[in-house]
Length: 126
Image (cartoon, rainbow, N blue to C red; front, side, top):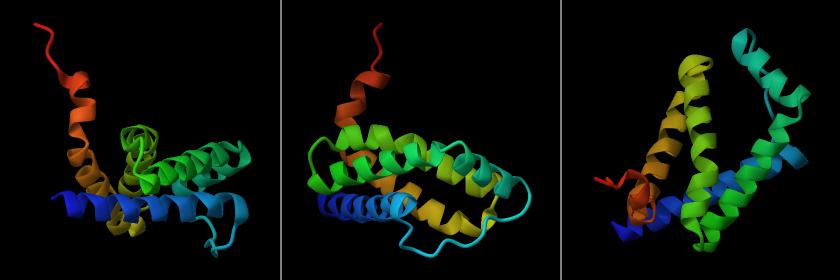
């Protein structure tokens, strides 16, 4: 299981670094935003420059994943990003849902490997 978690961590790290840097450098072709609420949501992210915060979180979290140090911090930074990616594709743009599910499963594999770091969050005090 440790090998699978390491592979998942490296894949996620590479993905988040590439797509996070793409927000700043735009080296990958981005299709036009879809129409409707998904396009409105994407436009709001760009107009407000909130997308740059998301991109920075992706790059930093991806670097932490690839470095193999402070992976729980990387999970903490990327967790909300992954949840938003998944919800965006479930609720607004189902076309990207398969990739969002793959990212979510990979993140859950990494989270399972590092679950002792988060044990205090679910520990009962009674």
